[in-house]
Length: 482
Image 1 (cartoon, rainbow, N blue to C red):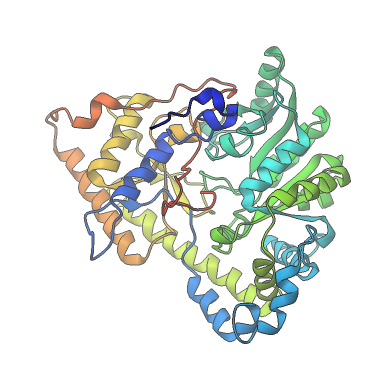
Image 2: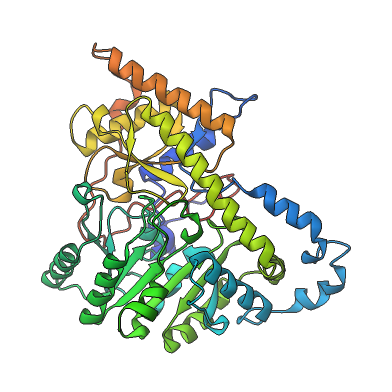
């Protein structure tokens, strides 16, 4: 006999669509998953350009591992440490790990005047877990965070799904390269007040995902003044800090509150991880660094639900304590990202495709394809995206999935592939754009045109909507935040 499980037997979370696997962002992942490109075995497959992953410096990591076999307790050289590390389960984490991460955070930010206290470092299962923990610590269900647009789609999951917290968009646009302004912050805050929604904080990403831009000193000072005057929290996602590959340099919020402006430090919290800067998404090393003692204490208790394994802590502590290696890695990582960015954007420029000109960080470009739209609408953006996914066979991410109100922007990742695959991707783009320009005849209806998934998101996201790729069990898509 076959029994059918009724939804009323499940919890609200289990039976809801809160994880958001039906968004365009995830649909692109499914298209790739079903037909992944391989240079020799499947050359006509979908190329993954929706994954913000840094694969450009793995040779440096591998070289270090060969020279330091004791760093792993699962080698004969590291076997003597196995028992002690295997039974360690203090949720404060290994002291050596916290010391090394604090030192790395200082070096990445390039300002030796900034110091991070190892005792304020709280572990979490990646930045995903760190953001959810911060949301639990700072806000009750129904309360809200302001988030400048465009923003990483995963925030809809990370901060909202299990916490019941709302996200209120702070609308930014291309007229000033999507810069966050005091006026936009005030407008969003006032709209929340009119809707009787209590704002508990502001979430910023610096460097930005998906823009690849950094926040300048003036903007950061304005943001700190805003949260201080409103007495709301500031959560700073700085997980791309080491990916800034050209001038101007990255400025951490830690530098602003230490040197530039007086504020209530209890309101400031930093989220960090090693997923992007080191290319370790599978290690699930997330960090909460809070200047608030109560938040730090609560977050540490909550970290019991998502600790970093002691095996990983031990390896990371050994690697990041090697100052010579760390300095070489940071320097070479920036050089290789800059080189890849130049080659990729030059290839796009050859067919007239421009990217956001102020980008100098991240593992992606914010690509402007508005000139290829049939009309300036989000529907037309989705139609173009469907062609790129199913005909050009590139998984790029449409701007609407990042809550961008201007049609035609796409995030395209360039650091998760080798040089040959990048050239194949550029070749496909060139062919597609040239055909679009040359072919003036209307095309016949395509099979996918009758089943477009369009986004109709409210201004305050209080329903479970639009999360990023969230792969099913056993899928090769199980990755870190992207």
